[in-house]
Length: 234
Image 1 (cartoon, rainbow, N blue to C red):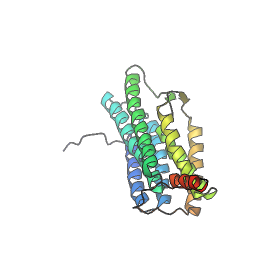
Image 2: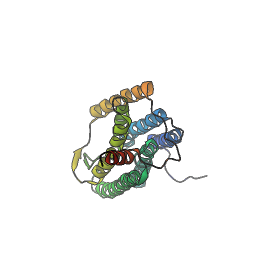
Image 3: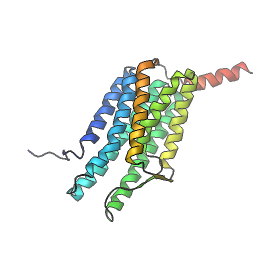
Image 4: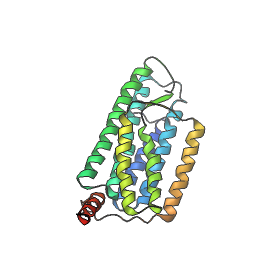
């Protein structure tokens, strides 16, 4: 019996990262944001090392390399495109403004990853190894930025926290598609980022207090607060 795809050690971490994000989505639905943020961060760790592991296999065929490129981007769409936007929506980025930002973020992530596939396929036709520079902000960065933003709920008001989530989706989405050079981090930098995220997730597990908004509530708390302020001063 023959199966489609690749199932050797070069893609294991990519598969594990995707599974982690799917599990995280199910936990976010039930309001367990501690588990959801942990799953997002863990998916980020998997993505940080899957390419390094894949490149240890020197006899990969051209088809296996192309499969790895496509697989990585498709999984990134779920892990760092849909998953973070899903968490933000459940946390209160709702209403017309919220949906616009959620859709904008997801669209930018898909555009970026599609363009990456084109560039990487073209590059590998002429050179080997790993590209040393990013074009714009990598989508994996959300596995670091969202946990760090989530941690701020302990030191700011709920409204301020929701404003930060709105800004995060809009700004990060824009940085996904802006073409600027960004040097890829080395192993020491990656390990330092992993340590910071691990500490942050540990704090979230120890102190998180956020509660799931009512599932039928489609309003946006940020917009409502602004409207209330305007009404009070008129």
